[in-house]
Image 1 (spheres, rainbow, N blue to C red):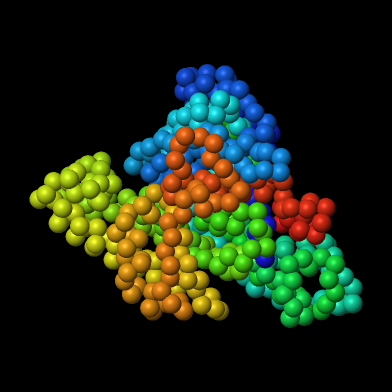
Image 2 (image 1 turned 135 degrees about the vertical axis):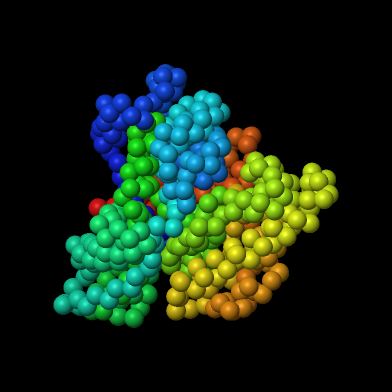
Length: 452
């Protein structure tokens, strides 16, 4: 079954109140130049904004909704983060990140000629807990059709149980028994009634209802940081979305009943986020703290150069003329050493999914770190997969914007693999705004239940 998103909503009143609170404290003030820029923007009601706040870059996409047609990207912006702005995929310095976001937004708005106040923001990091739970619900009267009220009760039970599990996991990892968590995304993976798999349960009769349900939770402190950044930028936060979930959603496009099965690896600067899709439904999302920056740090240490120089060498790894001859072998060794560590992280993370069936044999790569050819090669040519439940060697595919259905790029900027997460956020924004297709039908009713 396809995706039905449950996202964290922040109303306009809440965002404005947060902005006033920020200003009244005298801390994290908006610079006068930024405030002037915000006041002169021309807003457009038919646009949505995707804000991908990554460890290395902030990417902003402004898209326009068209009747019966695809989302059209009309603005693109990108700004580089300082090394201290993010930690393990989460915001570490709110004013600094807000400033970088403003630069990316300004670029996108200049290209688009308009601004969008309605934003969806991605969230990632090792403390994001996304898992699929299987719930068996035995109805007292199998001769009566399943109602919305029953589905609402089932969904609430699953979310409450999953939330408690996520809170315990995060409490153990942070050594904080009082940690607060919040639900970010929910999706029904599959439903069976009396052993028969169905896509629309409302109205069906039967006694034994089994639901596979995906939920993702994040620490409240991470979400609050995102809300505060949006408040500083005078954005209306429509949704916060787990980034690998958003990428999965982008790959499905409008075909919510599609049977896509794949592993998605979003390799960012600070983390690698992995999601497993099975028969069009997300099985789970997990992260580990090794991304593109770890390769750069290894190169910097091996060559005794600063971080920026090492990053330039890493980006030129396929062009030997741009790397001094006496440094090439050392750089190659540093990359191979880090690849071994990263690959171990991939193996351990995939083992943690504990699936009842074989892993999908397609792997979709995206994110800035996925562009490293050595990383693609190690997945494509080595035997790393043999200790995992793969039926055969997985096929590796680097995802670009052209692979994402239902979204068209109307700008002159080439949207490569590093923009796929932002494209997924646009899809989550559209889902949140319009719900699933056929609002008056059973799918629309289910989507509504998940958003309550």
